[in-house]
Image (cartoon, rainbow, N blue to C red; front, side):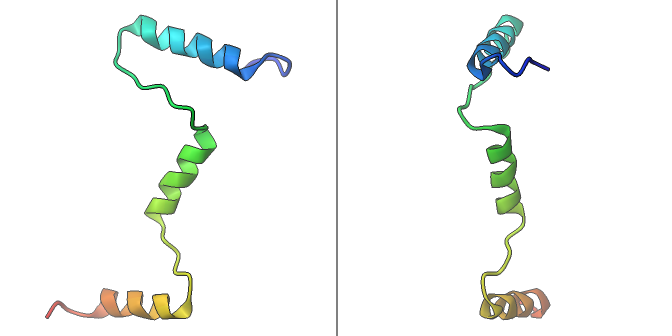
Length: 66
């Protein structure tokens, strides 16, 4: 945990230096943890946007290839 008054960029720079010191290959991202989780969930769970999409999905799920 960090104090509320400490800039997040300082902490991020310290963490980046720590990872570099480990000698592992890593890519630093500007994305937030929340945005990465949300993007992963959006790809994993695709909610139909309309009733037509739901019907098409049901047909695909219950139809045998033909």
